[in-house]
Length: 532
Image (cartoon, rainbow, N blue to C red):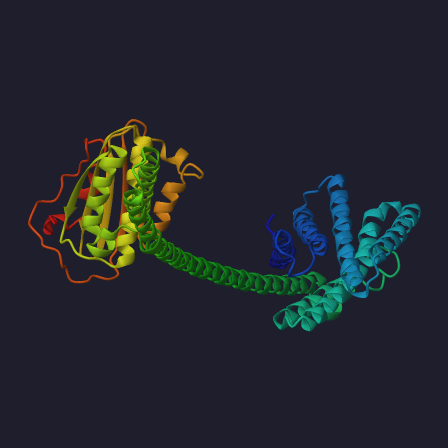
């Protein structure tokens, strides 16, 4: 037996009816897992549960109706399951309406009192119906669930959504106002349509029932319910989409604020780095000026006074009678005076070597190597590559101090008597490289102060001029120190030059100076060495 056209239309109505509420339930369930911009999670969850349960009930109605139309009876348990599912689906609707209303009128216990009161009345009516007409108990429960749960729940939900629309209007979220209002109207109308039930032989079903509505309106009540269910679902989904755009706007705003904050932090870090380099530069300048001032005072005052003292001792020795004890005392004083003069001379020379100011960087480095040979017993080979020239005084001072500290470290720690110093002039930078074939060390374990103060000082001096400091070492493989300083000033060369090929990329031994240190630096082969 096939279904008639009218019956097929009713199947379609029930399908749309159930689909609308089930879709609403899924959408609200997903919304409860996000930030509560639509409403609080505890408020949305009952409405989501209502949509899922009531949508399932309507699809169950399709199965029952088709069984009746096709003459396929279902067991009574299936009918009882349907009416229980119907009753259970209306309870979350009452809870939702109570929660929405209590959130607006600030009555926390209203949801419990309303639901409890309606359930007591419903159970009492069901018990009375069971005694009066037990054969139609299922129909009575269906009618009572709609009268006592669905209609009040729909009205409460409509009022709650209406209040919510006013709230979002006060919050200046105007796009949400219309969806909430239409959803309020739809769910309120849905609650009112529940008064039209199937005739169950009890008041007021004998007056207000689905048959009466169809005779007056010309179409089944389920058509109207499906229409208002669709209206409610469409507007709630519209509200969810609007809220999702609000979330995207908030996320975009938060990301923009974060980007601005990161940019601000980056600017501050750059400013601090610039300030740090300026402070380092001024510190180096101030330190060298103080060294030069002390050296001048020692040379111009203390050294001259000692010279005068030595001359006076010589005069005293010549004028005294020939007494051996006095002559011996004066001779000792003269010797002490000469030793003091030599000590002051060495101090002046260490504070600020005259060669650096008078002759330039290259002679100063050669002088440093000679001094290391005499005082530290360190044989240092000096090699100059590129067009030798006078540099900015501060650059020359920094390179000289780095070389001084590096050679001192070789003498103290490398356990070797041989080192190599290379100075490479290029158009835009100058590179100092000092390597040895000593015992080497673990760079990561030694760089931290206090053991690494000398290395830290070399790095700070190089970075104060915007340069780079490199250190390469390993136990048993020697050490290579490299300072690369950009040339901020390039005065014309005033030192004679001669042509010599660039160095091979090795140190005293191939393991002491890896090949990439020179071979990867373009342009070395274009500049002849300095041989002053």
